[in-house]
Image (tube, rainbow over all chains, first blue to last red; front, side, top):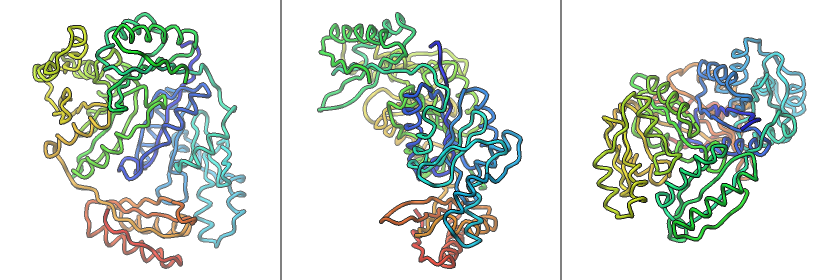
Length: 250
Length: 250
């Protein structure tokens, strides 16, 4: 990989770790960022605990080109992400006028407005992430992008970043499917992987139409190389005595 | 929390980070271990990269009472979890006779059997985790429990650990639902949280029957305290002008 731009995803929220909520944000981030040319290499799910969030943000923001967080930017006491990002960067928390303006567009009694305005807090120097749902914006601080936890809102915020981020090679997948067990092709597959270290070959068993099978996924940035490796995999499946289904680029 | 037993989950596999596969193992582990009295406090999703797996295992196994891994114990070249666990513990990798015996029960040509026997590799000194699906067993090494990535197989392996692990307080949830926005109750909720630091109060917006609402989830080990806090939350919702639905203990 000559030009990889990498990312870490931080899923922030007790509700994911308790099992109350099934996270679907990582998957959406991985596929969307991947399509843009940003490779998600690592993800962490962490609780709504200040020390943990601050330490984790500081650990990963130096290790990856981008960090994307989801969760903890609402108006209640457990929404501490903005404050934690400010602490991680050692800057004060401030009220952003553009978010405040949006929040005030919907009138509310003073006490409710005071709670809603908590969503206008951003670290000093933060940039806004547009929120096409019309709700309060997210923000970025250096290479850390802070978004909502509700999938619909997170997806809207992410869509507004399309074209705004530094991107690198897009990793593509070329898949071959066959009704054979992983072990029937494991040795050959290992040999092909050694011959083509530039790609990653993954092997994923499935059960379909009451038969066991394996999907072989070849991943890499160069689609010509992917086609060559796929041809080798197709041949390996035939030599193992099964008829492969070449699914092509995904 | 007086008697907390904690866990970290490691989801190992490029297919999760690429977005090809939606992980559902963390959620199952969180709910099942939680019911047993083991609290999942942290989770990481990491690629099939040896250095990363070894370093991550060594980092988290000293920080949490238990580590549960899923993925990377099949028969192909990208299944490197067992080898990585051995390296993390500084012990040789060995072939476990009980796993070998199970694998050999299903006859196969020599080359295929050789690949399948890769699933018998465990770090020296490992204990087995039974696999009720009849496939090769998982293993544990000290406080690190290594299981399959395929959800059905992981769930079967996990079920075999019921009653075998050290457990602590079971964290229960008591929920109250109301058709009001988070901001309408945020301030009062923060006050209740301050009065009862022994519980965690979470606030989760939803959209249902074409109306916005909030589920308030109170979590803690003492169900009497949960009932008291729930009563305070119920009252707070009424004071905000809505009729709460007390969902009780979940």
